[in-house]
Amino acid sequence: MVAVLPLVVAVGAWGAATASGRLDLASNDLRDASIALALLGPAAALGALAARAWFPRLVGLVSVTALCAMVLVGRALIG
Image 1: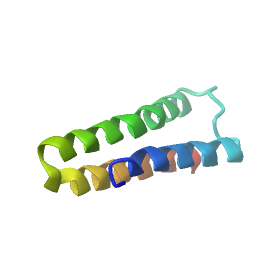
Image 2: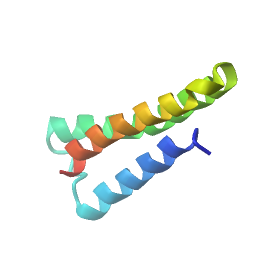
Image 3: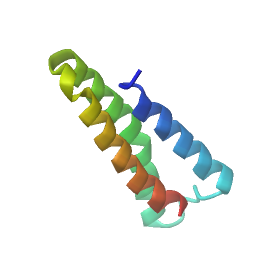
């Protein structure tokens, strides 16, 4: 469940940005932030699954790091 958490949070942040109308891709900064958020969720989930396969103790660290990165990207996108 922890491995899928970054993907769920990325979808939630994407939904919040869509609901607030912040996904206007006119500026380069918004485009870059939305692309980063779209790629960060699946990449973080794959990283957590890979960590679970090879180093199970690192799944939490990978997930927390991905969530912190999503907070930064989501803050740039929404705020």
